[in-house]
Length: 133
Image 1 (tube, rainbow, N blue to C red):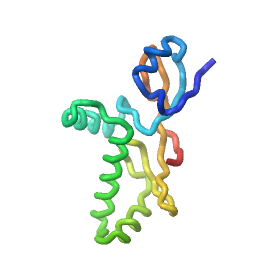
Image 2: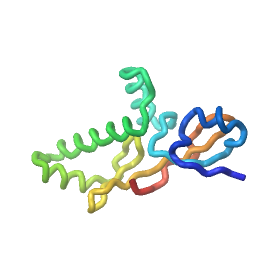
Image 3: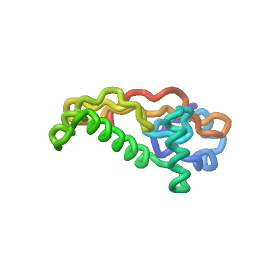
Image 4: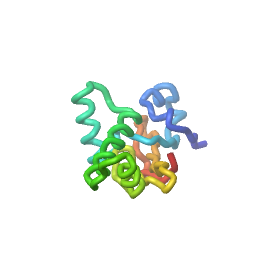
């Protein structure tokens, strides 16, 4: 039987606790620090060099949020309303927490990382899959 889980399973302790029973389990998360993506690898390396610990989902989302705001400001936004309008135009922004699109209501449409346990190691099963934050 294949186990299905949520983002709380994205923890190296899963394998220690679950042992062989979690082999092949599938779960999702908004960030995977061990992703093979060069963008994620560079972010993780810089974060660890600065803070001496691996980044978590909140760190990844904060980083992406800052990059989104910088992109909006570079597009010419100079007021709160212009910043909001520029952010509402974001489509498929490549971030360390997956691609982001801002919908007309201002909600972030995100991609989740699909993860699994292979030979006792957490690995990315496939590229991120679309989901709504």
